[in-house]
Picture 1 (tube, helix red, strand yellow):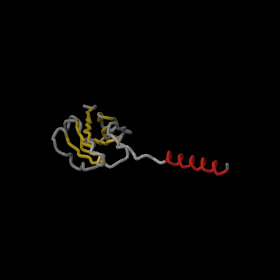
Picture 2 (picture 1 turned 30 degrees about the vertical axis):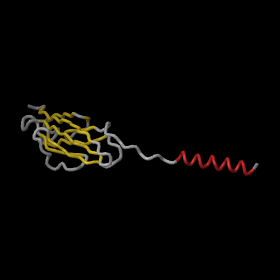
Picture 3 (picture 1 turned 180 degrees about the horizontal axis):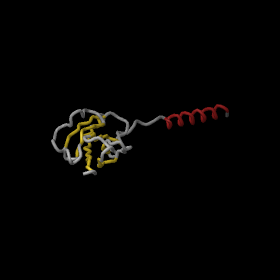
Picture 4 (picture 1 turned 90 degrees about the vertical axis):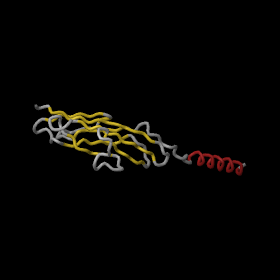
Length: 143
């Protein structure tokens, strides 16, 4: 009787340990990935998905300043990033194979006041790709 209980108990322990063994992680997808941006001013700028806007007035920001873009919402993994300036069709200067990019932006009085970027994100494990875009606008609120 004692042997039967030990065998049952051993079987339950083995079954529990097998059930507790973690499964292989499923390949992540890119559906939650988003390109966020903000225009750097003296305010506490907060990144927003797909679109950002800021206004210049004397003492509130530099002109020109920077528009900052970052891919967010990616699950843990290994990725490559290929940035494109949608106005020129070329990679923005200084934006390499990294999750973020900063580029110059000027108000509409000293430039066009906009930067439009896209980034091709590639999951290096699965080969899945997704292109994300965002637009930054910087307006002169003074003149």
